[in-house]
Image (cartoon, rainbow, N blue to C red; front, side, top):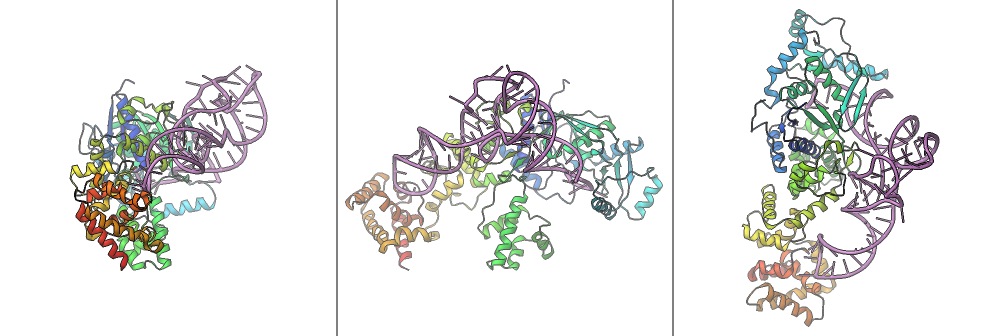
Length: 548
RNA sequence: GUCCCCAUCGUCUAGAGGCCUAGGACACCGGCUUUUCAUGCCGGCAGCAGGGGUUCGAAUCCCCUUGGGGACGCCA
């Protein structure tokens, strides 16, 4: 086929873009771009109960953050729109009517309870459940009668019984038995199509030539092929990507975070550090919903999880792309790293920019093996990228980080100050580390907090030797007129030499003295940045704090 | 339970019958640098899941076992 390559990423708007979705999007993007084709974005919002308000906007923002821009789709439009399935109802109905007219689909009106009972019965008898196709299809009159009786009316596909073959670029030919395709529902009782039906219709209408998706969809593919045959549509080329697993070997999912929070909340309630009323308030759920969550039946939204994490001082694993942004990763690093989850060019190269991936990527070289997501390696990638980035890139990255961390102490600073921060913090791995290292310099003096362990270890231990040093240094620094890095350096080093101690013995008390903890940039730089007045004021406050 | 996919260091992977004494990266361990936290530098440990074949020769091909993962919805 000489068609231009068209791929799509088709998420459902249920939350932020997660790591696995991002990789799927990336591979689709790469495949399209390397062939000079188009990458489309389509929103699969056919489940009214699962759609989350605002999720689509988040999804788009995450994709844009990564630099995966779509040629057609929401907000940019295109000739095959609309690109939101909820807006394409009429098309699905038209196709369903066609299948019904041709005897390839039929109305059914089983209730949820009836189907559940059949599934349970099958389970009990240890056989697989298959929907039993009726002897003859319901007539229009019967459908109307059912509707009038309040029964849910759906349209089911009359699946042909045959062996199915999926030709997969990564897995080769996969053969599935006839029962791999059953009489699935194609139009739900609410009039919206099921995923399977919408995908087939849209991929045809949007002239999608290649479908790259997670391996969890492999079993769905024969369904789609069957529907394509029934509708007379072309079958795109398929490639099923290996699943991304956690380091523990479990499927990476939002549940990860939910589970950690649930366990912590339960422990906190059991341990008495939080009562149930507070927990419920933080969750933002009503008592019933809260109980359901607690019993592992539902999941909390991202915001509620974040609130719990803050309250219980939990660090949640990054799973959503947004999490990595908030943690201070560079988008090009995240992109580079996920490209390596399942794909390799065949040599030892690991570092790629997006345009380099476009050139180097080959679907045929995507492996079939599930990959575990190794955060430690991602961190190293970010560390390397930060070290290699120029100031302009870092400043933009830091600004972006601050835009999603408005509460940061660095947020209000001007570019020149941020450039200094970047320079003094050199060696940081994530923007969040830069913040942890330099933030305390910029908070109001009154907002200063002291790390109890640091105060104990550096100032109070050994009869307060550190505190005494700090007092003497305060006097000494009060004598320094020009509060420059050089002058402070000279004075402080001089003090250390006079007393025959290492620099550490004087730098650490000073550090705790001005920032309340043991971490800061070079002590000379830190003091100079603070200025004489603030330095002396903070040291006085620290001495006061210790005497209290 | 049924169906499907997969199997090289702890992790991501290179390897498409002799180039393999199995290469790289991360982690880890040891050392060095250092005013803290980091960074950086040097060195080291570590793997073809097991068993059968095929072949002069197998990490590479075939079979079985085992192990892992995924799917079995009016979710996508």
